[in-house]
Image 1 (tube, rainbow, N blue to C red):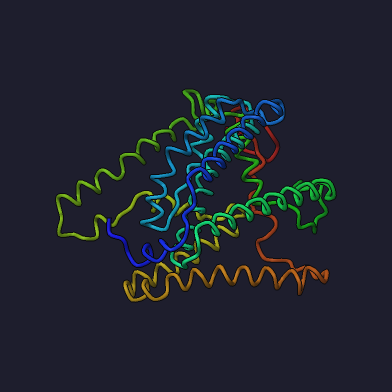
Image 2: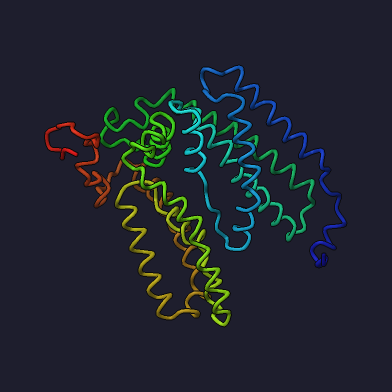
Amino acid sequence: MKIDIHAKLMKSYKQVPQWWYLVLLIGSIVLSLLMCFVYKEDVQLPWWGFLLAFALAFIVTLPIGVIQATTNQEPGYDIIAQFIFGYILPGKPIASLLFKIYGRISTVHALSFLSDLKLGHYMKIPPRCMFTAQLVGTLVAGIVNLTVSWWMLENIENLCDIEGLHPESPWTCPKFKVTFDASVIWGLIGPERLFGPNGLYRNLVWLFLIGALLPVPIWIMSKIFPEKKWIPLINIPVISYGFAGMPPATPTNIASWLVTGMIFNYFVFKYRKQWWQKYNYVLSAALDAGTAFMGVLLFFALQNEGVDLKWWGAKPDHCPLAKCPTAPGINVTGCPIF
């Protein structure tokens, strides 16, 4: 393996001993297993469920890391994790969420940890300093998040409950409703009732097989037409993961996301390489920075002063049938009968 200039310069620092990582790994596993036994009724996750989640994260972290390193995209497997555990142990929504946390979020944090180490490598930051900074940051972030969550649950009435909150209350939690809905769908109801032999969405399971087979024709075409250099660049995981960038909130946000993407893609295809190389990352950074800046500005300039703006399309979602039952034969006024 060729050692570049960065690796040569980093040899001047002491490396992090392997046993530091092993202590963290074993300690985390022991504390998690202890939680599964001590708070068994609350967490609903049996000890073998945690070990299964840990094994899943151990298996998929490397291939997802390879995809992220080559494409800057990190495909998620949240649904697959909850799908698997929902079949194994249905009727346990809290356990389903914990399984996703240990199985999926462990991979997210592992890759984020590696990304920080890579940045420290190029910035010539001593590895032990990076390790200490990451450990302290994790502890501080965990304590602050837990404290704020407890404070909000104790002091904000009807938190995340649209019907119980004041009409102008900002504590509607649109993003976290997705997490709640996922716990109900995959944990409480269970995938077997939705995608099993008698489930309403049983045919959607075939998409797993289609997704697994989609890269095959592209690989075959790249071998048949080796002169076509653009064919191997077609990356099915990256294309599929594009839908994961869809905002998990109201239809208005989704429409804005679609319009922005279509307009920019039009210029990309029209001007091709010039626009893609010059303005792609600039536009992405500008949108992120603009959103963060406007969020702070609107809070201090308007919301903090009691000024309320009626944004177009914000409320309601214009989906009057969203609350209608979908089970066959149920008759509700104003709703279709399936």
